[in-house]
Length: 396
Ligand SMILES: Cc1cc2nc3c(=O)[nH]c(=O)nc-3n(C[C@H](O)[C@H](O)[C@H](O)COP(=O)(O)OP(=O)(O)OC[C@H]3O[C@@H](n4cnc5c(N)ncnc54)[C@H](O)[C@@H]3O)c2cc1C
Image 1 (cartoon, rainbow, N blue to C red):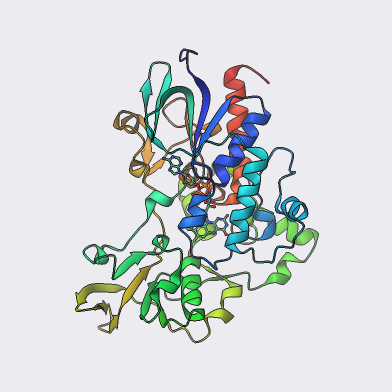
Image 2 (image 1 turned 45 degrees about the vertical axis):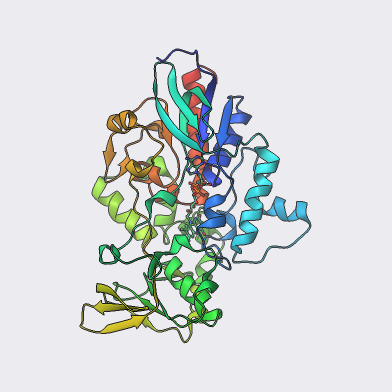
């Protein structure tokens, strides 16, 4: 047991949906908590303007213990209506509203380093301030984990960039853009490019595009729908229920968990995008095997010998969790973390192999299943975290 001579009990790093929700639950439980980060900054700066959320209304509330800070409460408070699907800018405003209401003490500074200390963890902020915290909750999301196909490794960013690098896709006006990927981000980026009058083509490795929400009737069957789908809205009929129960999900054999997790979050586009993509060429079952800059153009070679000559490749190729890319974790801590495929192995309370160091959000999904990659998993994460810290602190 570590000494209690720390300056602070719990430090949360990150102020996205998970960090904000955790701060609210911990404070409600009377646990002294500090939280750092720019609220909702991943959503604000690393997703394209004009985007809509793929998760449905019921799965997009940022959880709080009383259930009073929902999207509905936000709309009521602001006296305005929110369309469905939820527009990105409105969700960001909701997140800021939640923060002002529930986490007014948020500190916008960045955490630069977290290191081991006999009393807990030493935290250094970007302005040099340091303090000791008994526990650290990492809620810094996936922003550090961008994945790019190796074939683009030597291509300058002017010609190939990850989708997370763009806030405003209108910057590609007058250029031809190839969008690489088959998920929501690729398909929605292509739709937004088309709507801005920019010539776009989607190229995807997969042989088909998965669409979700093609059968809305299945969600309107009353008790039967409730039996098939959890309100958390992660995964297809049936599996959705299991994914929503992370403690049960993690009891299944690893091979089943991996297969089920892939099925629940495989690349897919929301059905409402289909119409918006009319007229956008979608080339499926093809891999880009070569990329070279030639003058002001980018020449792409596909695995069937076809070529594309464009001005830019937008890599909507997702994220691969690798917590060693969290630069703020000191080497000494990283060495003590048990990791599988880049994910920390977590036990109850989402606590890692380093006692007192917790991970929320997507990095927790190897241990607790795919729910943890979505806003709707924050209620589970916050409840679980709070319960464990309370019991470790000896209060009930
Ligand atoms: C294009 C796209 C669309 C998506 N759409 C949906 C959707 O519709 N529904 C859904 O549920 N999920 C969606 N997701 C998944 C989404 O990323 C997660 O649901 C959500 O962001 C998880 O919240 P989080 O709090 O874990 O992470 P984030 O929202 O990424 O928040 C992490 C925060 O940590 C901060 N931070 C990072 N490093 C530091 C540091 N060193 N010091 C201080 N602060 C730091 C960041 O600034 C950021 O604010 C989408 C993802 C993408 C990429």
